[in-house]
Image (cartoon, rainbow, N blue to C red; front, side, top):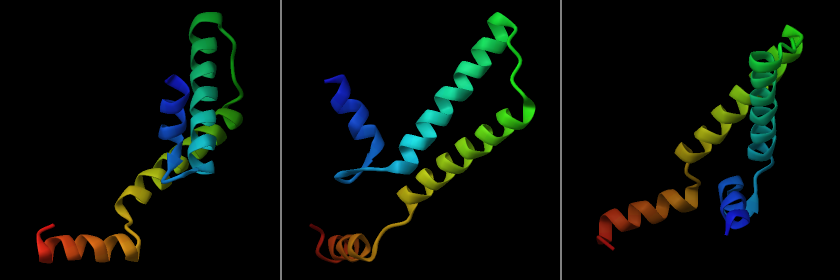
Length: 86
């Protein structure tokens, strides 16, 4: 059940999106860096932290933009739904 939920969160349609996998990995790395700095006093080099941070923001931005960018096939089916009411 949990693995199906993870696969569904990482997939777009029927395929697993590599952008989502990379973004999730970068998010996990940032979380580990934050916790290690907060509780254990382990300092992360700011250049490394900034690089992973920007990759995470970019991945989240591209993933979010995919939801708003409909393909031509999806647009035509939504137009048909509006016209026919089905």
